[in-house]
Length: 207
Ligand code: TZP
Ligand code: MG
View 1 (spheres, rainbow, N blue to C red):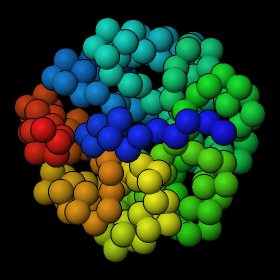
View 2: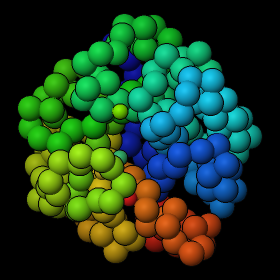
View 3: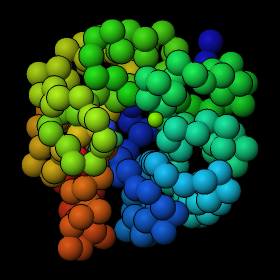
View 4: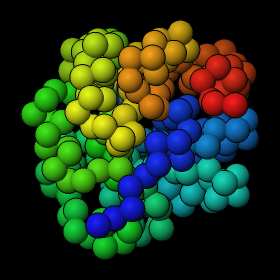
């Protein structure tokens, strides 16, 4: 039996970015949990970005979650990987576990939730909660109510809300049952991303 992740060990502010440079900027203002989500890089670029992002996170004491490419995550010595449903079906979960990696999974409906729970994840993501501009072929917005249902189902397992979430919506997601809130555009498209990240941290990180 693996040790489970304490909900309080994961920072509620969970920015998702697509380069090591972004990781450096956000750990620089205090992000402690950050996902590297690179969609169209070749293998060497993905590996290099992952390596540099990991170095930034280690220096800052932050946790990096590598999206999609669990092989690169293992090869570069990451501690966390995030997989969508298609990646999950194709992944060598035994290899991921053998290396001691923590695993987050995406879910957008109840069948996906059950498939996700079956792999004994370390957190479950639910979304898109609201319409999103940041994901190709995203499922329709699911709404806040599902977060409460998901939380009832996952119990102490950390629940991550994702999709179309700004700071005001983040607070509503946390009130509805989410433990952590993932965000792309509300941070990266802000005129002052560092300032916006500081606002998120001040508003949702427990004292
Ligand atoms: N998965 C579900 S919604 C989404 C992902 C990766 C995109 C989230 O980005 P944004 O800009 O915070 O809506
Ligand atoms: Mg994926």
